[in-house]
Length: 317
Length: 298
Image 1 (cartoon, each protein chain N blue to C red):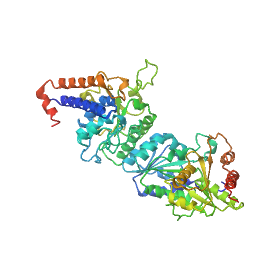
Image 2 (cartoon, helix red, strand yellow):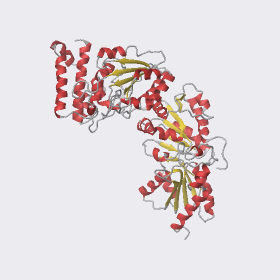
Image 3 (cartoon, rainbow over the protein chains, first blue to last red):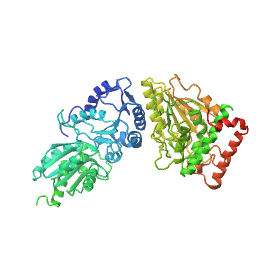
Image 4 (cartoon, chains in turn purple, cyan):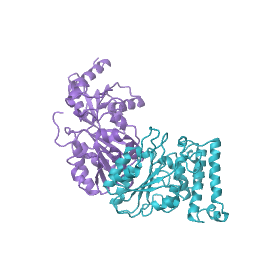
């Protein structure tokens, strides 16, 4: 988390969305009173922006009405609110009616660290995963966020994008092909770390640390959480001796759960270690790193967990 | 035969059809539908709404949102009667291969949205009405909610947007039958239920023009309230509170909380049938006036 970019992923996205809005007037952005520097130009386009106030049910319901009348619609709020506050509107008015609405959530995981359990974007992967027709994106850098603007515009069905609050270090070049929903920011041979969002960056540091112990970890950036690119995932983990999932969300029903389901359904017997948050609400202050340290999501804790599991499966024998 | 007499016969037919659909399907919100017979006939047979049964998604149609989706059993006979789908489909209400469910679904011709979870229709309606304004279309968005439904806060969120955007092309109809599932929406004698009154004042304070139909089972009264709903330009969304009786048409199920979602059986069922048949006979007291109605609407 040491080097962050000045422009947030959300702003990279809005910046790329603006020319799309200029080109296609049948687009609408609705905010639940959330702003962003690069949202401002969009908000000044006549009849392409609405602010419904802090009213997330109205946010998604109104988007459904616009989408039924032929618009592509984006709804925008803090991650915990654009999802959990109005999940039934997402279920029925976005997903069941299969409409081109993209929900943009800012502040996934513990990005709103000192804001407490009210604002923590956790429990959301599990909440959003079940709904048919929904595509879930969890980007890890600016180029990816920027590319998602066009991808979400072209995709005619419901989507949800969970952004970290701040900018994250660059991982990918501007010409990167993001169509697979999964990328490999670091190649490796015998251990696979599947991470998403901010945890991709954490995984890269951990992979480096693991080298000291003779583990050659591959890092998979799973930025499309749904639908899973099952074929690609199964291919990547094929020769691995240990698969680790890493997410800043609850383990219950989260990204790691989806990988466990994939393994069980396909008879994959590779040992799987899921790392994320347990059944705990976080009231602790002191910042995101303090939270990570206390709940085992910091580098040292994660490395320790991986080494412990590796020993159990006789990785080093 | 007067139009009013024709409409009354249609309402009698509507209630009989709803009842037998419910009996046949062993489910459905019959009493809700009974409260809406006259209103739905005014909307669809009385020329209030614009629609084209031959082209259910005709661009110029009014968007009618049945936000209280459990009233599907009430809307289906109307849609069949005006030709959106064959009347024989009504016999398969809730059956296999049918689209006619307890709650309205948009794969049924003439049904605009998926509704039944309450408090969704009005937020969606604001999006549709806003789209019509932006696109300079003259169709109306008409959203029917139950009064019990108005306890969902999303309605009030939507009203804030509707008035802010001056959506005078939006009509909110409130089916004011005064009943919850287990209580009443505006009686305080039990000290148990949440009170919705004064509803008209609440709607006005949220920026709506509010009208009230004191007798929602009177065709002239309903038509009066819907006078001039098209082409309004006062910048205010319109709310029409239609006071109805849940289960209207038969004394044994009227205003009976137990029949919110229960199909009458045995003696009760026979009494409802008898009441509706007696009403029919009364309406048909002048046989010469009856014949055109029996033959349909020609």
